[in-house]
Image 1 (cartoon, helix red, strand yellow):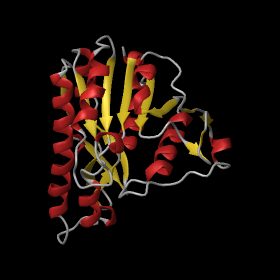
Image 2: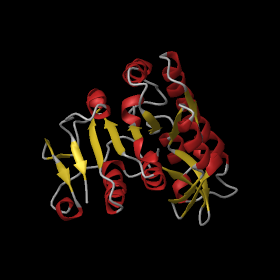
Image 3: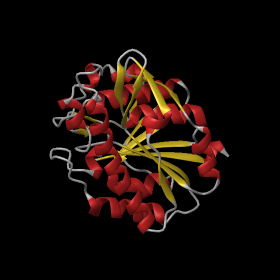
Length: 251
């Protein structure tokens, strides 16, 4: 069953106004949910980024520098920001007829020095077996070295793809793929990435922007699992296994 699982990451920049402050793009969410609802045969796990819901809070409380008594209040504040976005994503899916349920990494994931090292997968797998779509998100989690840290949706995608041996992995973004000099790069490997000029997000992003995303996906490719990066408008093409004119990250 696991080889049939598709992991779909919705970038924070496509579900929120990433340059704003907690503005959720409900119209975009409804559009995405409609596309997913038209494909009930998909065994899907969705992960979404935080966008403007969580990154500003994490930066304000300096979560990535470590968490102690002086900034521990930021754990609850940051988590509630991303949890609110997760509720909106789940609500949009359910309004379109998708049996979806939100799963908060804070409750089931653990990190060390900012890197995800464990994630409870048994319940996620069982939900998929039941025909329910789990919806996870970038979140604040406990960290062995730092007390707590932020883990990105891209880290979660990599962990789940390997743990569940996902059949397909796709990342929907607000750009057509990975861009180098304004042009989409059709494929990226560890050999070719060193020749590319990949920028970071101009908006508040505590998880590394596009460079952080590519690093996670190259690590995933090392495990023999390729991933696809494409514009959100091409989500249907990805789900249908068609050409999405984006970027494939492969070994």
